[in-house]
Amino acid sequence: GVALVWVTIRVIGQFRTLYNSQQAASVRLEQALQAKADFIADASHELRTPLTVLRGNAEAGLAIDRNSVHREIFEEIVSEASRMTKLVEDLLFLARSDADTVPLDIESVAAVPLLLDLAERARVLMRREGISFATRLDGYGTLDVDAVRIEQAVMILLDNAAKYSPEGKAVRLASSSWRNEFIIEVADQGPGIQGEDIPYVFERFRRADKKRNRTRGGTGLGLAIAKTIIDAHHGRIEVHSRVDEGTQMRIYLPLAAPERTRVLQSSVEKPLELAP
Ligand SMILES: Nc1ncnc2c1ncn2[C@@H]1O[C@H](COP(=O)(O)OP(=O)(O)O)[C@@H](O)[C@H]1O
Ligand SMILES: [Mg+2]
Image (cartoon, rainbow, N blue to C red; front, top):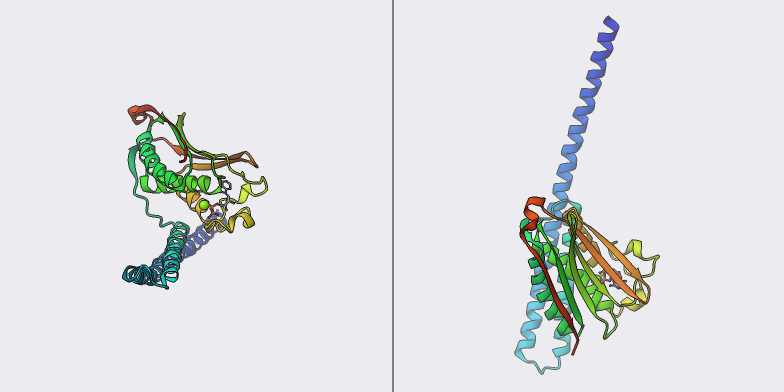
């Protein structure tokens, strides 16, 4: 009896020590994460400010005399500073997501109208790039999402579809609802992705065909960011691709509570708009 009590007390004591050291470790971890998040915020601010100055000065130089012999140099400074600003923003976003500090501004939005808006903006970009673009936006339901971030993720897919498709090939944007998910699909008839590269396309700085890609300005962060955004919304993103046939990227997002999902039933189809 006495032995049992003694063992019990000892075990409880050990548990308490273990618990205390675990508490201390989790406090240290929290402090470390906070320090990392602060560092990321500071570093990106420090990087962005001089880039803005650089770009502003080069633009001022261009504005003073558009025919100057220095025009090409100024233009290159403007374009490289913009590229680097984008890169800093992308890295900041990924670093924040590592530190679990991605700020999401979640709101309930009707799914199809969200995509209609996005499709209109995409249409303008596609027209400018001379890419044929078609949409078929079906489905129903409400999404609890950060609409700006979702648009960013879909735009990354559309940008890839347009960038890697040869001239004259169309890019398609489609949506549908299936059970409790809303599905957004971006499809192209481009070169496709080799089977061995498919598992890695969502990795940072991963670019499948280095030779082909060198000519197309990209950093290899697009799909990593898209996946981070979709993961943060508890959705998933899938690739289906066949070499020489094309690529389909699908985003699956959980629909909001069923009693709210019959808010909107619609189907909007726009025929293929051929590039000029
Ligand atoms: N629609 C597509 N068709 C063919 N290859 C693609 C497509 N989308 C992505 N890829 C491949 O996946 C890689 C990673 O894409 P991404 O993360 O957007 O980086 P980036 O476009 O900057 O290279 C690309 O470099 C390309 O090799
Ligand atoms: Mg890309």
